[in-house]
Amino acid sequence: MRLINIVALLLLSTLSSGAFATVFTFTAIPDEDESQLRTRFDKVAEYLQSQLGVEVRYIPVKSYSAAVTAFRNNQVQLAWFGGLSGVQARRLVPGSEAIAQGYEDQFFKSYFIAHHSADILPSENFPNLNGYTFTYGSKGSTSGRLMPQFFIERNLGKKAENVFTRIGFSGDHSRTIAQVQAGAYQIGAVNYKVWERALAKGIVDLDKVNVIWQSPAYPDYQWTVRKGVNETFGADFKTKLTKALLDMKDPELLASFPRKSFVEAENSDYQPIENIAKTIGLID
Image (tube, rainbow, N blue to C red; front, side, top):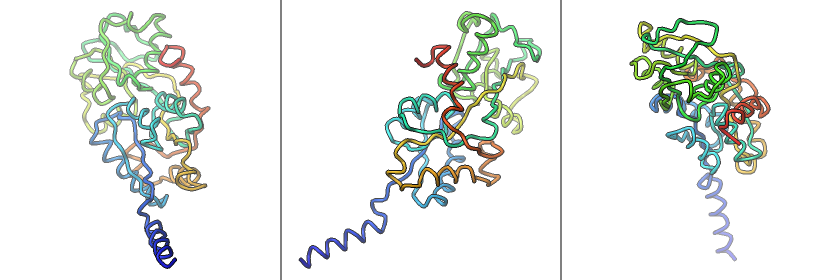
């Protein structure tokens, strides 16, 4: 009897010490080069850990689809998704929720950029892109693929593959800028935030590449939390997580996204993205 009591006390002590504590993990779509993402999201992990009282770890992934897969498989419980990848993830894991978005993500934009050799002047009207070479970003990108394809096909009245002489997928927005600036493609579509940050850093040579058209606004990035986090981390965990994201005020953290602030989001905010993805055949 005494031995049983000792074992019980040891077990209780072990549990209290956090030896079996569950790590809260999150990821993000790789929309820029990996070193920038690691710097950004390791700091976010530190912030969330200080606010939530559990160990928080950022898990990098190599592609947009890998981020969705990690979410589906419960390898991560939170993700910084784009509009399309968030829709895909929530369809795969019903009950998951968009809980916060950047202030700017309520009215996001894509920029169409062109190499100087294309000789296309900036305009508010959609440009005639027939006969040029063109690159998207990632195949799963909202601002670098989904919305650009939608705007191309809506404005030019034919499938994108019938507009361009060659179509590529750079993989991320930073590479799209680099490829168009180098002349590997004449036209490209990029996330306007990545373009503006690259411009501010002096990475863009405006004698070689410039913005020729900017899209109408649409909803984009968001934090999506996986269903079941309250059962794993505590009854009010999702509420605490949402508050922590909305209360992220550190200028350095916000600048790394870059976002002015984070505001509330819900799944219905992204219904237009789901509708467009169905319209152009990216999801069923």
